[in-house]
Length: 256
Image 1: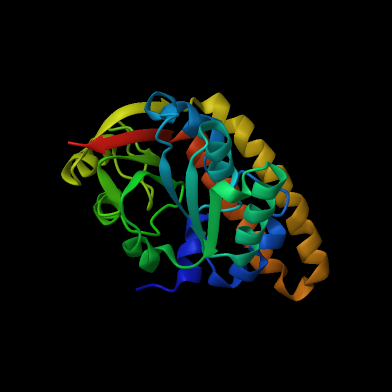
Image 2: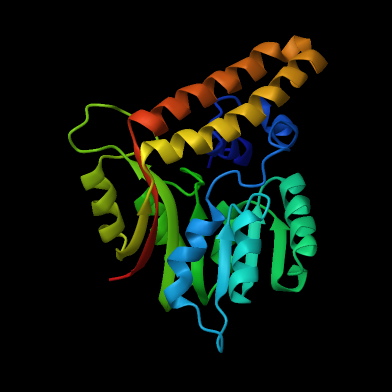
């Protein structure tokens, strides 16, 4: 199994595991690192029950943006796991600020090991974690055991249009994307697919914040300038793919 640092860095569009320890500083201005909390909340709206609150597991919860939003919107219990202790502490503080600390349980750990200890959840959140748990097929098969028979999976991911010749090491063609979902024993219930304009707006906010912090890191650690500049260039490359080559969205899945 790959080192968790490598997996986390890859999920955040880096290539060198050395950047791992600097990620909390580089990403300090961003609460929403991956999945849009509003989108997830809207997808789950028809499945929330005031009398029987949802029990949710957020794998790779980051700084708790999605977890806290769901706890507020649906008065549900949310369990979040992330590999970066700084992110976990930030998530706890965010839950306190929003008055839902008693509804959120955040812990630091390797989701590749810990997911297997969680069972009987109504919803699993796979929020833009990339290949940390493997392919879409592998990820869904792994978390299937965490769900109730009627459980749902929120999957933030992307695919390459079948008509495109573009290649991406983290994304499959549309037909393969759908095939992996089906072969894992799931089907799409609802979806929110982003258009390129939405991606541009979102990416500009994230990139601007990262670029500013990268400049600071270069000044603080000039001997590691190439490491930080490489990370910024990776962001530019990934943004170009997200905006011009890939179809990105959030899918709500249920068992077949």
